[in-house]
Length: 291
Image (cartoon, rainbow, N blue to C red; front, top):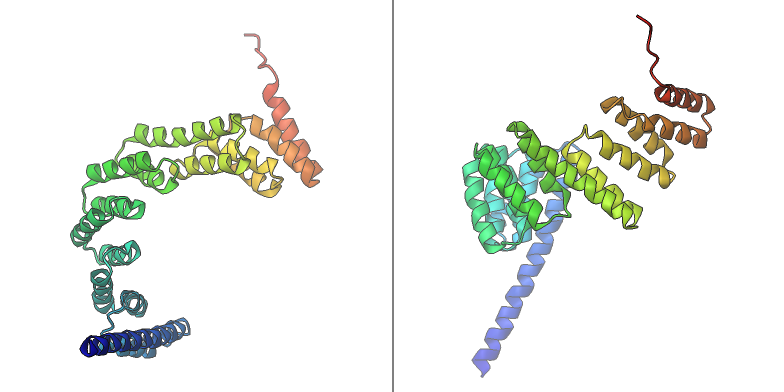
């Protein structure tokens, strides 16, 4: 019984020591970050080396150490620290993503793929890891598989924009414009449906923004976004979106009328009249000249 009690006390002492060491290491790394911001990179690297030599078993310390080394340009040491953090805490997706980001920066997509596939095996529901997998596949030249991964992500989490954006951009890059357009149109029509159903304006705006992220020249989605901004009395933002709408699609003459209303509310009467004139001109029947 006495031996068991001594073991418990000793273990508790070790845990306390490790906690103190981790706290001190965190302070040193914070000092290193401040030094980096002030341009004292060499001194920051020396502090990082001090922490590295302690070989802390704390995953968060290793991850922060990796960030400091990366900021100082010591990428091999950054990679080693990131790898240690992942080994110490393989269920933390952020640690994995930091290492993946560095591997892609170092043009090592195949290593990133191997790491990501293992991580997704442990965390199959991670949206961020799945997007990272698609990005690594794209970087390694496996574009069709990457497109499939992004498409799966849009189906699994239809209310989150990043997968749609990545899917749309890659589809456009691959010449699959119809696929990219479908992704953007889906968000646009969802926004219209939400508006019709009386959903909050901010939710509708988010759908139109997602559509524009996928297809930046999607004038109808931008027009609806501008109308939503106007409803919230965010008039300067609305004006900018109406102007961009007309730039992308000059035939969308209703944007001139909405600009007229927005300028009036802003007290810019001269600009308002110019837009009203442009709108009225577009409504005039085309005159047929005699031959």
